[in-house]
Length: 315
Length: 295
Image (tube, rainbow over all chains, first blue to last red; front, top):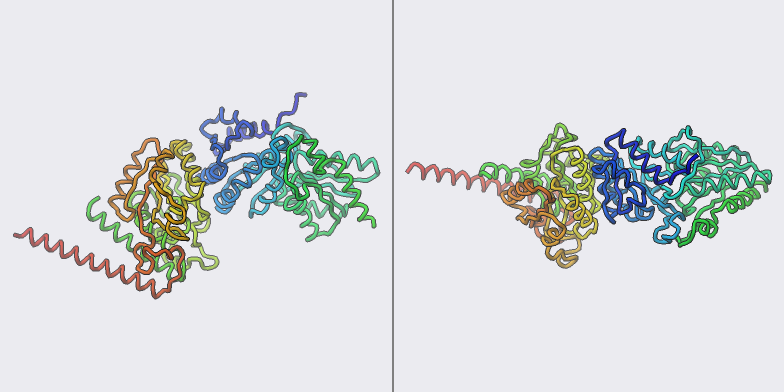
């Protein structure tokens, strides 16, 4: 078996496949075409690929304009620039206008590593979750990425995807099927539910569940790739079943996955909850491993949080 | 432009001014200044230059208008109602809860609006997207854009300007409504645009400067812009904010001003009287000509 390709290569390949099937597919970049991995797309479809230069606001607006004449634009930049720098343009020109722009933020959270705090976005998911009707998702491996991009292209309306760029992994079988808005149960369990999202955190949650199993704790693991709309049904099902949760996200614990799960629990079926993620901190430079440790995003951190929650549950 | 065409355009512009003053006056408050300064531009576009069909607002190969200064929505609503996109009585629903006509141009709610706008600075970027999309599809139509002079403070306008010339979008014809006023005062005091022509030239655009209330000048500029082979065109229109409404014209307070329906009716009566006088003068002139011919 060959090496699993970079997630960005899967992004590019999937868009090329889609472009062959649907002439409405176009892409936009903001001087990060190399980083996003879409140079092959541009070589194959030069008339349908636009490098807008270092101007994310204009990129988002241009994408909205392309959508208004029937195109399906995928526009990408690093997460902080795709979100913070183009927020009003994406909000008004694309979403408020009920258009069909697929915005992509690459290098989410700590995966910005050596680019550090200016490029390390822990809030983009929360910003996006505040846009009415927007679908917000973060695939955790190459297989779900490929399939969820296709779902996003089919979806009538704007989407925001957090895209891990470098490296790849396969957590699913090739024939797994995905729906936006439907979480995937990766591992069943009775004592506690670990709800994770994204490339960094889903494998850590799986490892944490394995660690807990050794202690006789049965932990379910859910890949909640779509954070908005959140899969309420699945959360309630596992609230009934386990009564305890830990959310795991490469993002601030407010406004994204942790908040979304907390809202469902508080409204529909109260259960105990611990949240693993960034605790009100800015980004910084470092290797991925260093950053995982420093922000407390490792499997050990998740397992420790699970034990803490279970202690409260068993009181 | 022959005399009859010019007269028709003038009559249409007056009718649109009246509809706009009536529309905002009926509500009692609104963006009267920047609506009235672009009446001639909207008139020449919708009644002379744009390929559009009110019965088929989504026609794929139509010309489109991005009203980037979306707060001038009421002026465009007057045009669209007059053109038959929707009933004229909708105009009295401006900003009423649940209306199809919100203060700022909205493509989701209003038939005939080609792009939503209202957060200033965004329209030109969307026009770039439309123009690129039409180029891919081989659609030979124009994307018209109207931006404000105050709006030109926004950095995004210049990002879009750079990209439109980079992509050689000769299918974009933009207008700046240069009425020299923004909300807080004169543009020269608040954020001076200095040599606006030179700025657009510097960004690689074909730049034309016209009296924005003169139909022959606007017509010449648009025809010239349509011949441009590789650059987008910016037509900078010198205009008067609030043009044609005695209570608003040239007043710094006219950006989003309250006025009573009585005041609106008074302004409309003045415009109607002006029309009558002009008509009488024309008849007199024609009679004089005829009399002269008999000699």
